[in-house]
Length: 138
Image (cartoon, rainbow, N blue to C red; front, side, top):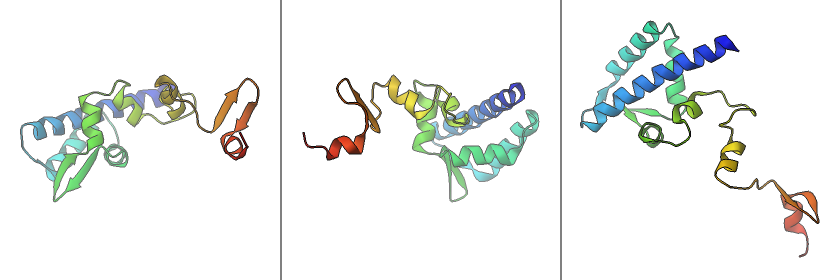
């Protein structure tokens, strides 16, 4: 667990650095060339002793950046991650999801006060499937 956690934190820091760099360039109205992005990935992965392909895949697969006409741009999700998500945005996007994670979809829904639609719990009926309750005559 210790080594995995250490590596996740390193990827997290590298991802934060790269996203903030791209964000600052776009905020000032400049485009960020694909060549500079690739060199930034290589330098940060070399500095932190990480795999550059994995770092690149993590940024792209989570929908944080997109490549358009040899330029790298932040997506809406990337902007949202930088400008402020209340629940640790980079952690939620970079962490491996599991049932015990505080960022699992069910726990986020509970924090926001949304109920789980798959199961409904009432005092009289106990637990029943949502579909069964819809098919019952009320």
